[in-house]
Length: 137
Length: 251
Image (cartoon, rainbow over all chains, first blue to last red):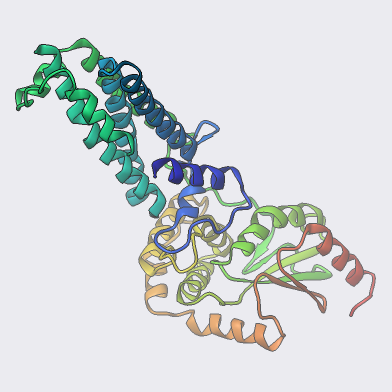
């Protein structure tokens, strides 16, 4: 879901003719055209795409490891999954603050993405603790 | 999402894992791998925040377009042989496109050499927020700041009817304008009174009615000496129309 949202927003960010790209709730166009829509020359949406791509890759690696070896993947993969999601959630929190208090416009897709990455963070968190408990046992 | 089930299974495979209690996080954080990864995650987020600041780091301050001679809603010499009259709505995206892409060319090629003047008139087609924005521009005109407010409103344009031009927002923009303009101070309280009192309502409604009488029904539309140009046309269209009118040819 996160990949789909970030992918859509990236396409829109790179295609200046895509207008209007977000109808209904909020004002994605204004958010996308604001001074805060890029980091350097990279659209924020592309960062989101990289984030979700990284998460999918990490989870895929863990699943592949389990299927190949029949045991849990190295603990680092669980920790990095959580760390990556945490990084995305913190940055999404900052972006949501910008939408509400600086840009004065809310992008429904961006809020949905923030919710998705926060949910991933919550889902991934127990793995870090469980891995610790397992390692200690 | 699909991987979360597998993740849960793999974590529990070796043995029934002891339930991580409240001390689970404390223990996990004492692990250099976990602590290092979490610190790294926070640092990446902070780095992206720092890199995301707009140039100048001042919240993207508004800078009005530099213009030469202006008089009310007209830019250029008042006695120019040809006047390009624009009918526009501040919520209309193609009006913004004209402002961003074509108007600078017209300013350089037609207005500054004195070949033509540009006049802006309101044609409200997108509802109450467009009406409010037009009234705000007229309230700013009372203080000689029509064009600055015109530029600011197009800068702030969002999706149609999204609340961008609600009165409270317009008052906030007026304060932003007051902080951005050079020369005589912009009196925001006077602006607020004008906006709250709907002092320019009739004037804007009259301009919209006038456009309808001329057969102008969509934005942006332009009247150049009797020619009607509809839509955000390229600069060449305006150059040709002005040349035709200056040559004495009228439709």
